[in-house]
Image (cartoon, rainbow, N blue to C red; front, top):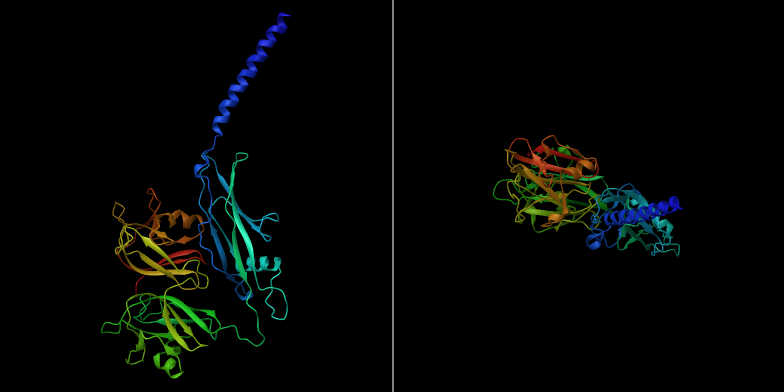
Length: 403
């Protein structure tokens, strides 16, 4: 009986200890969910135009914020897809420990096939439909997860009309001249005018206005590095093109185009179908996720850490963002540091050195991780003027001396 009584005391003590330990463990699992929401941070298009010729191109890059679960634990993200829209048929498109997943036009074409779209005008099948996406965030702790709201993407398969020529005469047109700030009269870095539709070429360019020399002049070319392939102002005028009023015949030895507008960034469009050459506001074209990237920082002479005059990197349609700028090297403070941003005046849209390095980009040796609080880029080269390019297709960041 004494042994049994003693055993009973031990059991009571063990239960009490276990209860206390559970209470202590449970305190470690309390989650502050006040900041646990998750949402997509990328901007979606009104519709996604899908063609088989562009199936390898970027379709969409989904990005999202990092929720705060209140726990020091890794978070995994699943990008989920639903054809019916309520996710009863959900499929995990991909999983990552980061904050983005990209899909191609080819992926979207597969989803279009799942919802029964086609581009045959002879059938009753629709050419437009929607597919829904959402992101799930979860940690290694059981039951700790959160879902974003669904985003419904509208997919469009343009109808193929028999006999329609849906291509351009050339893969690209090129532009060279002092009026094009990034290249001037060299072939080092000419803007590429991509085929953005049937007989339509587009490029986002920085144009320098004419001021009495030849600094506003330029010419188009049908072949890279081939001066004999030029198409000047009379070539287009004589062919019946309507040419934007801010472009005129330079009346120089080559009858180049002359830009007489306000120096700045423009979308320059050459339409061989409607025979027009127009200037407009820059836009995302081709393989460009954004129409432009921005950069601010002490290394950039024109801007410093101020959004009053940010460096604006416009995309060329091939996923390459370039800008002509003056850089100041690091001297021991933060004067050589800067950062890229996807939205103007939005500090939260920053993409620092680790963002690109972790995404597999090869980064020019003139840059290093600043190792400061924001892990900015640090310029360690020679002070001067450069063309800085970010290539999202080949995943490179390059720096070349300005022409």
